[in-house]
Image (cartoon, rainbow, N blue to C red):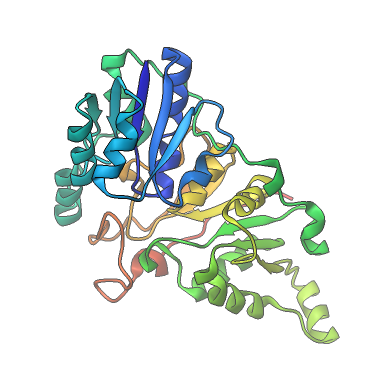
Length: 333
């Protein structure tokens, strides 16, 4: 059996589909291929359950011609959008399409009444595969880090070579992120060596946080030591590739993350994750899968969730979902 998975939406959705790739291979012994958006193939490097990946970066006609040559028996469509439906139509194969529950998401955002499935989105994927008699294996998300991308401990500052907390500060929208003053407060609460993980867009925020904690004169260092302040910041934003950032997550003692792709990377490594939710909510079904996690969110608001994705600024102007969030945790030494 030869199966094509269409999954081109985003990095996190590609990761969330990896259990399905594994199950199709291990339970059906199928030849599994994936169609992804250009730039997302690095998430599937070294995946032993995947036979081939194709990039959706051309016209429907050329893509159809390329895919038609492989004579797929089934198409599994996780996108279930206009373009993926057109690809399905052009291939003329048996298919299964995931119900993304657009109306129920919209209804939840508009009314705050949650009628979404209570299962994690991956378990919803598995339920969709019932016609193929897929059962599931409870093993979680797959991410196979290439050896060449593993970050050596010696690359980190000496202050971080004996253990650190990682905070993944990237997010697709600002309303998923803590304001800088609250990020500083979180770092102070963690009170350990910290690596800030993000991309080029996060460098400025990370520099501001690092500047706040930077030690100065001998008198200041002595005062900090008396106060038992141990938050030393290493700004890794923009300094490492995606896979190298994943390596930093793998090697961290403690993980803090927004609702972002690094949260799912941490889940793949079976880390305990401290998750922070602003305008989105775990009820959307994309919380960390098959790993222990703690949720920080403000449940006293009547405006959450305000979107399934996010905004550049809080629609109400107060941003209480992040500004009034309580950091209640203890990290053992």
